Image (cartoon, rainbow, N blue to C red):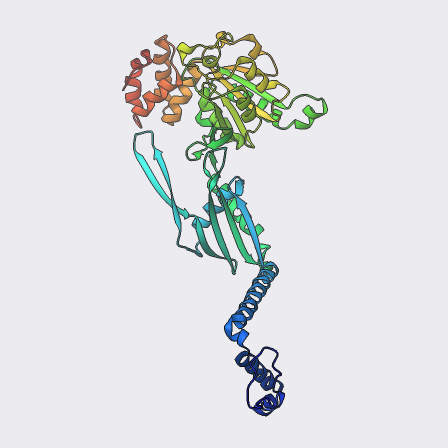
Length: 450
């Protein structure tokens, strides 16, 4: 006979419900606890590891549930904004964040601005900007997590720098603040350039600011012969105000100007002052650049920054009767036909103001002189008696008597005098008109060093 006192430890052993009922306090939770204890303690498979497997599976399911729940909460409660480094607002945001007072950063990067002044002095300015990593800011009462990431594999092909992104995270209810933040960043960037002229140069397939924005040069500060400034300014403004007229007649909306004359006559200075007057920037194109090709030239001229004047200086040095002269240092891959197509070909840009300068217009090929490529040409020569007097009074206001004597003595030299020579003489004799008058003979020598 079976011994009724023997305990059956097989997995099929019947549960002792009476014992569970007697050990519990009568509540459902107590009965569940007793049931678990009897199963866990009386089942050899559970004791041998099956129970651990069940517990592990339960924990894994719980973990998966928590992850899904947190993801759901993240999607419902938080919102992200990604700003890639190729977007214009990327640098705006970094500059704004560097100056934002309510910021917590543990990762910083340094930006060094190196400025060499005309007198040879050097000014170095260090700016600490948010580096790769996590940052926390408070903007209009809302907290935002900023994550700046730098890719170690992806490279921005335009400049060779690693590809970067900045991700802003905040509560979903504060998502509308993103637009306000970007607007503030843009306004800060515009304000830093307000009243200044930005000079762009080509860098690979894009235009980049060259140095710091320069203070706008006032148009009255450039002394040209009578009527020249006014006639060019009138023509440019008339062009800018008649875009609809060009469109209705199917005429390409672009205008080319050629300023020619001897060196030091003020051609480039006038263009800089004109840009300041129009509130335009300047894009300088060097046709003798080593790696410049026809395709890249066409791409750059079709992607000029808005409100910019394209400046091609010393156009005669790049092309001379359609021949490339290695003796003169021209080793660019740009062909003469490539330049002509960029100026007025099928793929040429619209709404463009192009200024070209040259000291030797006689060597320019007739193909580049025709209308559509050069629409307005002006001779800017050496100083006339009018310019002599205007420049003297500009440096020494109220000295009309000395001004007349200076003009008479300078004109009597009977030699060409550039405005650059005059400026050098007046700068050397600051606040000393009598000394300037006494040194008028030095104007005989164009390369005289004071």
